[in-house]
Amino acid sequence: MKKVINDAHAPNPIGSYNQGIVFNGFVFTSGQIPIDPDTGKIVEGDFKTRIRQVFKNIVAILDRADSNLSQVIKFTVFTIDMSRYADINDVFNEWLDEETAPARSLVSVTELPGGADIEIECIAIVK
Image (tube, rainbow, N blue to C red; front, side, top):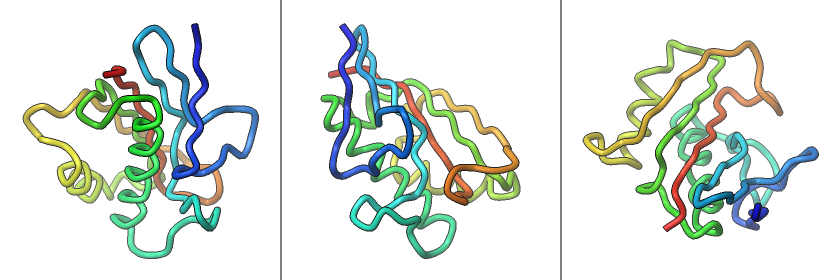
């Protein structure tokens, strides 16, 4: 059975979707952009600060789904600027163990919702 996941510590969906879905032992998150759930606005600061906010949002969703970053098996990252690849790696390394990190795709796009420059989604295992 499909279970809908929504958590107050992650941004509210702005369309007909949910923050995450648990199905058959997996958590599928919607793409998260660097929105502060308290203000509903993209966080100020540099690019790495925005990526860290995305991770905070993902952690809140995973936590609500009884999972965590160590259970992630795949990240998909969307960016409008592929020259930021090193910054993306730096922040991923702050949150994940490089040796046991999950699979990841990084895709360059023209535009993201809300004027964001980074969006990340993941698939994780429920603990």
